[in-house]
Image 1 (cartoon, rainbow, N blue to C red):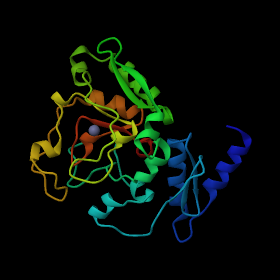
Image 2: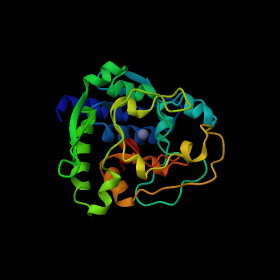
Image 3: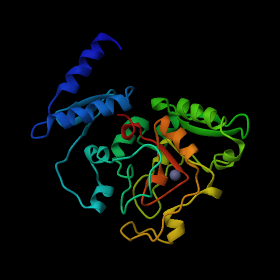
Image 4: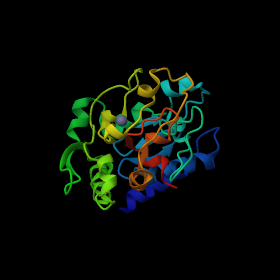
Length: 258
Ligand SMILES: [Zn+2]
């Protein structure tokens, strides 16, 4: 790191936010910078400062219902999620760690329009020894390299585990989440749906898109060995959500760094 950017980093990390718990904000700032060192400089005066000069409000000070949290979260709301790495029990009711997302945060890093996102996409060869599937993913934050590393590690697994990750269903598509007007992270080229033949999705199993409705059962068929490899490289898994989506992995290192 150059000396000047290092000093800039220290100033930003050291900035307090008026009326907030300074230590907590500093911890969030450290987490963001550690997760996204190429893109984020820190938090200053209640704004997340990106290295491209964009500033996004960190904490709007509002307390929100679950519906409001999904509809218009600030970045602080996004960071509050407790995603637990490793093998965990079934998700608790309405616990969806990682589904609260601030659209502007992702648009700033990966592109605000389909055309802008596509400029940052590159093609990787997924499972080159066993499937050879070409997939378009973002090169921002090294997402392409991380997925290639995941691919390499998956190919070391016992052969009976490979069908789960062969015939990947999709990576980049600019679209909203079904039943909502919220953008899916598939829009940014940072997300992968693995083989749908072995996957479960709360909307399919329960024939509803109503996020407020209690879901009668949780179903997962994805072996944990696969999940562990994705998590190691900064991807969270939709199988840890009450609104489960067991094919779905997205690059969210801010929820995985310590
Ligand atoms: Zn998905």
